[in-house]
Image (cartoon, rainbow, N blue to C red; front, side, top):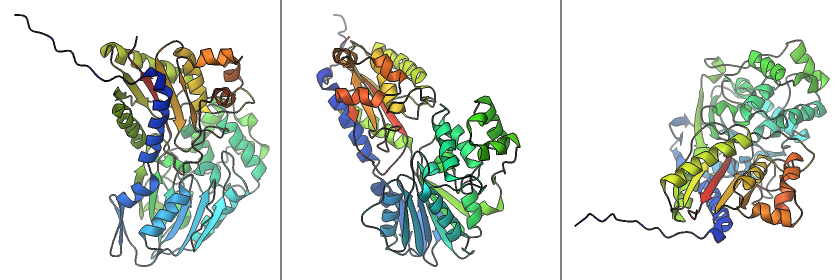
Length: 450
């Protein structure tokens, strides 16, 4: 009698519900990285000691607080609750401000993706506040993504706000990955690249940050205002030359590159970091792992691809599909999924509205045409580029539906107008600001029907 091979069967999710499943997974991801929950779980008070992971500071007197970034409002409010309102003074800089505000805090609505007057006013207020601190004081910095634009004042006071806006516009539309953009930003700034920490010495400093950068580059979060900077002015000059940026900069900024007058940022071992401690509260890994768990609950075999995905969106999509194809071959007939994180690069090539996530999905939609597959890509902050959406979702019928409505995918992609493409189809992801930012999450679903 021969040995019978056992065939395992799995309840298959329905492809017709694919986009709904993807949307639900993304909303579960946003819930899983809830900022308040993470802070309450990971930050503790024990007598006069305040404990944040492995970091520990003695709060002999109430601390001062500087909260910067897209998560600043929620982080400041939760820290105030954890400390029972025992905060001496604080500054909050965020893209949107709450109706209810904390006592002893000053609030600023900074600009994003380009700085505004409050961006400059908040940076100057923070510099003034921390420069008065003594060795007996503690300052807690709450840092999250978006801070590079929200919080800024230049080293050279001849550089106007208009110049800063143009400088940032050149950077965010040139196609460079965020870590290289921030190298350039740091060396023009009076608060980035560790210079805020430099101003706060000799106070004891604790930085609690939500990471929206690659895991090995924590000093790139909000351009690292409180962390040692590993980048150099020479790297800054090289990036500007290699990417033909200098001629595009405003004259007040251009001269610092042509005359090579940029000032170096403080490095590891500098005395200003002698009493500094750091704790990563949330990162892209948390979002990616939450997506995997949620997808598995829907009946998929799911893997995380932890490669370097900070590359051109087309190349990333092509490489993702190669891995997805391999998963499908290795698990025939079974629904499989691939989850990836990071932030793809997407050069702006037209006057439209959209961002890297919607461009990624638009390109990917053509690759999965007529297939029982779904792709989603979205930012965990709730905003994608210059659009009001966080991203988009597509399936194997998206291109067919678009052409039936007279929409040419190639034209919309070339015009950087992916938002209007997906809005017309009803396939944008509209979460509004999430009050958080741990980079992007994208995933591919293959329903195993081929």
